[in-house]
Amino acid sequence: MRKIIQRGAEAILYLEKGRLVKERISKGYRISDLDRKIRKQRTRSETKLMERSRGRGLPVPAVGTDGDFRMVMDYIEGRKLKDVLNRMGKRERDMICEKIGEIIAKLHSSGIIHGDLTTSNMILKGNEIFLIDFGLGKFSEKTEDQAVDLFLLYEALKSTHFRSLSECWKKILKAYGKNHADSKEVLKRIEKIKKRRRYKGD
Image (cartoon, rainbow, N blue to C red; front, side, top):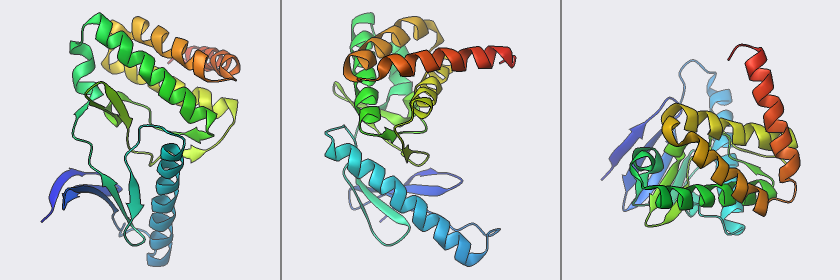
């Protein structure tokens, strides 16, 4: 029996036999063959990203495929970090933010871009953070891609966790710097991205 967790524009998430299934749904406006090709490619790509991440020891749910359009994953019984970060005390929040920085650094060092780094895509289970939803991710070792990935997290923190933005960002960057050999170049690029955004009036 299925229990729907989330219904999005691209996919449905549901629990089935104790595991989480992500099934990419057909789009009626696309030509049938093209639709199948796109859904198959995206399912395969996301699965590979998650498998590579787990292979590098990163906290990502175990994943496999069931057909061309279904991903079957371990269900992480925890809470979205978005829902709890603002209620944490300073010590706990600092610890969590340092873990986030370390995880992202190791992700980037492995040539993986998450593509949607928000606290909605981080599950807190005990004291461990799990990354989920690699649907917008890709393989890349480019400094620009890594900087954009981190900058998206900065924007998410600014939007949802504004009161603790400064402290969280400092902890994340400090841990990122300790765990990524090319962190200095990435952080320089982030500052350039911020300047571009300010110039455009954002």
